[in-house]
Length: 286
Image 1 (cartoon, rainbow, N blue to C red):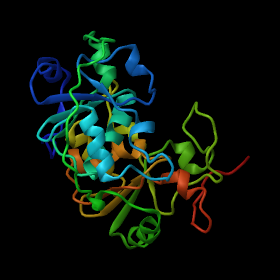
Image 2 (cartoon, rainbow, N blue to C red; image 1 turned 180 degrees about the vertical axis):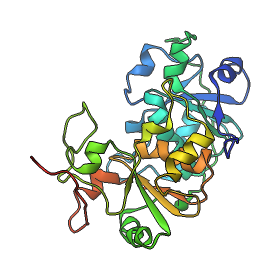
Image 3 (cartoon, rainbow, N blue to C red; image 1 turned 90 degrees about the vertical axis):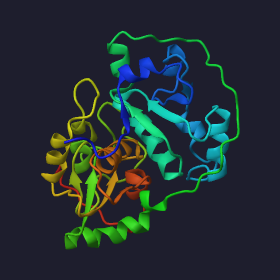
């Protein structure tokens, strides 16, 4: 059983195509300083904090901004754009989802990310890549890939009716309401803990192997199907700020081929702070 879409490349493939015209590498890390310590030769840096988000509004840059960003990075229409990064590609997955949502084509992920590349002893460089800025055509967004707050509120009814599914990809303690952030991170940024009513807890990292690569299609189908998250349903995934849920969106939509999967990028930072939104909490103080 193959993956539904041809969206993964191996570290071997990347090593063999470092100098192939039309193949461009973009590194996207949680640690935005990591790129400067060494990156794959020719890879350009995408800073998820500075490059993707609107500088003032709580939203993304517009389509024109996406075109300007890709042009600045030397990406041209028709290029094969390979994204990779740290933490098993979670921020690379976020960039993949955002660019896909924004209408950019030719996207792939390097399976295993930076973690696998480094573990294999492959070349890193601190040399700045040669970039020839160009003009990228303004893409058109696909709003079917994104869920907004009121859409998620309405989606609860579909979950209750059995036609929809909500996937909370955070840690079990975040899901239960015991904590409001990932383990070993500061507990800040949200007022209430818990999860959206009806959500199933399938932590994002359960989809990966120890080396950061994705599990087989059969293993992934069993993982989500066992929780009632099946391809016949309208699926919404969320986490805290959407980077982990982008990874799960990639698994469901791109690798398993579920036809309708949306990423709720407002996620728990928005839901847990909003007035009047329902929350379930299973953790009980002792």
